[in-house]
Length: 378
Ligand code: KG4
Ligand code: ZN
Image 1 (cartoon, rainbow, N blue to C red):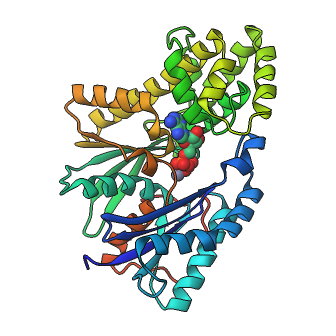
Image 2: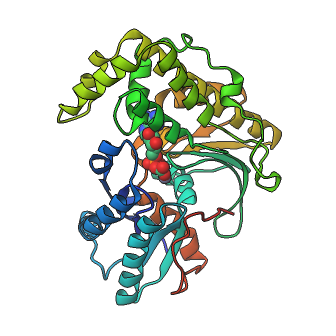
């Protein structure tokens, strides 16, 4: 069993990824083909383009993942694929490929929830460092471009079971990063560039009121409300209003024009194009988002008596979020774990790792399953 090697395939959004992981704890390869360049002109992911790019990339990406792991199609033990949540057309590319592969090779096929994949990215990283003992319940904040979820996890015989105790009512945190970057003319994706630019601004310069972060429950049906809900569309609108009121529109347009002519978007390119006002706004936006994520997560951890904290997903790569969580969780005596930055954003190693407990439980997919854009994690 310890030698079981699973090929993972991930195509839920804008990364085509494949990886081979041994026994859920040793990454033998992890290949990620990013579509950022395709979506950049639109300032966000265009679903039709994502499906087309996955179709182009899936075969070479899988071949490369097998080759780097020293495996062939025949020598792997099972194929695992993301079933959802995600973009339906994008998921279908990975699922159709995985089904065909498993059928042709006569190997088991395992479906994985993308959000459980993000949680397993933390486990995979920790297990690679050495033996890893955990105290339950684990509270996991999954925070990415498509998701802001709080899951309370308990162990069961094979794997974990989850209770969703918090989620965003509108935009995901990463989506807010991307939209704010777009409206400030900072390119796509917004997270990494805002993360770096924020270090040069004053996070207390612009005050965002609580009402811009906390929305009343208006509009969310009672049965869909959870105890620890997030909301990030208000702060995006507040940034937009600030840009208008402070007369920053012209400098945004000038920056957009200047960046159009640049072959590569790097912070070195962007920083000289940002005045103090922009840097202060970016730093204040980030501070408000980080404080909201950290305070609500720690409140949930206290009230639900969590023994361990996981923070994962693309936004978990954020340096201020990491530092703040480390500091504040330590004050509460709560151990907090993040994946390495590489495993924070979408990848297939997390999918292959999350499939291993299902392999042990012989929990294999039926031939008829399809993509589930809103798949729930339980
Ligand atoms: O997990 P991921 O690769 O894809 C989804 O499942 O959505 O997350 C991508 C998101 C994007 O919104 C991106 O802007 C954000 O993660 N992101 C970051 C950072 N790196 C990526 N947000 C804040 N700080 C970062 N360093
Ligand atoms: Zn993701």
